[in-house]
Amino acid sequence: MKSGSTTTEAPSASAECAHCCPRYHEAVELVGKRWTGAILYVLLHGGRMRFTEIAHAVPDLSDRLLSERMKELESRGIVERHVSDGTPTRVSYELTAKGRELAPAMAELKTWADRWLD
Amino acid sequence: MKSGSTTTEAPSASAECAHCCPRYHEAVELVGKRWTGAILYVLLHGGRMRFTEIAHAVPDLSDRLLSERMKELESRGIVERHVSDGTPTRVSYELTAKGRELAPAMAELKTWADRWLD
Image 1 (cartoon, each protein chain N blue to C red):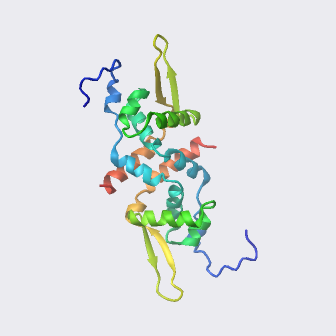
Image 2: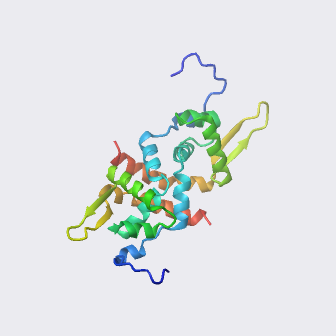
Image 3: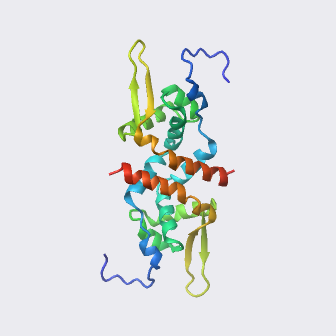
């Protein structure tokens, strides 16, 4: 609290209650990071996918940036990385339970996009 | 379609269906732009707010960047800018119908954040 401030405009009552929730902020910055939303959408609909399949499903995204995003999502527990036995080894990615539970938020955003964006 | 490509790994059936929807991608990049999600959250709960009230409700965001984001949201038809009669004039901001309809997506993301983030 700032004591001694000389504010001439009292905030409205509703504005007093409106504060950004830190957890929500963290979530929106995480999911909204450039390309991350698209990657999550693709994994939600595609199930377990190989790197090249994800790259194919999200055009315009470079392999370097996709690789960076997959590492971030793995480190946040949203994506799980699988390495198969056998030769050659195959690496695939899949949403964890934490990642799959983003589905309702993504579905609502999709509904909004279909209604409001051209 | 790339003819003549020598892919040795056929994509899985589910991966074939998983493609990022351009409208969804646009929506997530719009809402997920740095600080935009927080500003929308605050406006959704605060109703019509003045610039200083929004700035107060989203700490750590500079006035310069907040001003830039408000202009972007206004140009996308998500926020409406009101200028009051009288002296001094007062400028306030409010979500449009398009902006308010982001509420379900934001609510779902908040639910996810409360469950999964510390």
